[in-house]
Image (cartoon, rainbow, N blue to C red; front, side):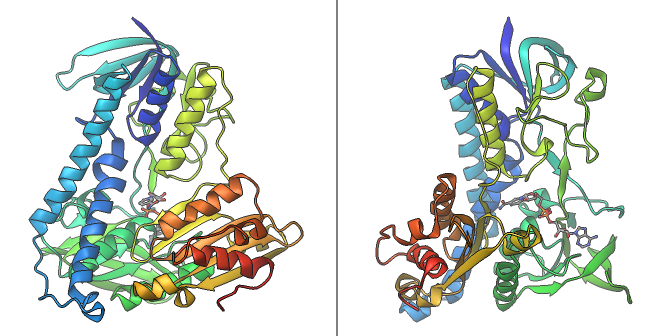
Length: 468
Ligand code: NAI
């Protein structure tokens, strides 16, 4: 039987594209080589890391966040095996959820490794080595990304002592000392998990700031908060070697600006220096599908590769490697294939770092606006002046709203603080509608909520906040 659509890869990009296409009446198959659906995000990424982030947060909170609220409990005891079992059960529920949705939408899930033979033909080889060829009108490459390793440095990741994020969410004991190579999202999220559970965590980062690309003020304040929680930072430091040594590993790094190298030892080293598009074994070369100079599948504004009938979305193409960006591309592409006008607004893609406090942003940073020569106004409001934050003892952080100086249109919103990852979406909706800081500042916000700080920062942008 011929399909309308065969999707290769069942991560957030692929599975969402498949469901949307099926909802729009297409006959769809999804090829997945893992035993379960959901890709990196559901199996070994976003979802399990959030289970550990939450559980470790509860542990830290029970240890020193409750006495001042008048809740006195004995020092908590860590049951790491149980915490991991919680994580595993969350993963199971999510991947089974995708399986259920495939059945509900009459999508054929095909276990095996997919290879594009030519436009319209995908060969799938299962674990036993048996091959079948699927005939289809359209093919979507949604194969995601893999660990990039440290550029120019040969590192043997054994997922026990030298780990990527995959091993970093599955350690069987809390390391005494952990070195995190790369102060990006993965490094800081997983670094905080193990730091809260008792590890001494040192981050070694090439750039002068953590979370490169985030608003500079946010990243500076965030680093201070993490340092207060016990994390150490070596910034402007280039890691040149990671080698196993005894039961642990050694990390050598040197100042980027030049100077003497130093070597630190740790029980576990987390390598979190980025991810790269995953295209190995897909048959792209044979099928004539072009890659760009960074190894990503090249697409046009409608997700089309250079070969008719072959499309690509998610981490394997340009743009931020974020699950929700991939999902939105999946929906837009399914709509396009159904003759509709799917579209993704790349100017309004929120980014969230799920530490405690969270960091969230949407739109442009001050640095980007300066570089583009845009004249803008900035309004800021600290959570120290927010009643709800005081009541919950989460006064660390602030909201910053950036708006066009002439038109007042909101161009970027940056939040560091408790619940930032939820609060950011009112800014995203506002920006989707081209709203101004006055629109946001005049929108009634429930009292007392953390979100009032968003309203106050907007008020500060176009006039003055009330509570400051
Ligand atoms: P990243 O690109 O966020 O950070 C990697 C960091 O490693 C950079 O700051 C870079 O300067 C540094 N680095 C590179 N080479 C180095 C060297 N030799 N020495 C020292 N530092 C070096 O990559 P990360 O954290 O591995 O995440 C991978 C992808 O997954 C990202 O695209 C990220 O957006 C995504 N992700 C998103 C999450 C979220 O949205 N909450 C959570 C986890 C991952």
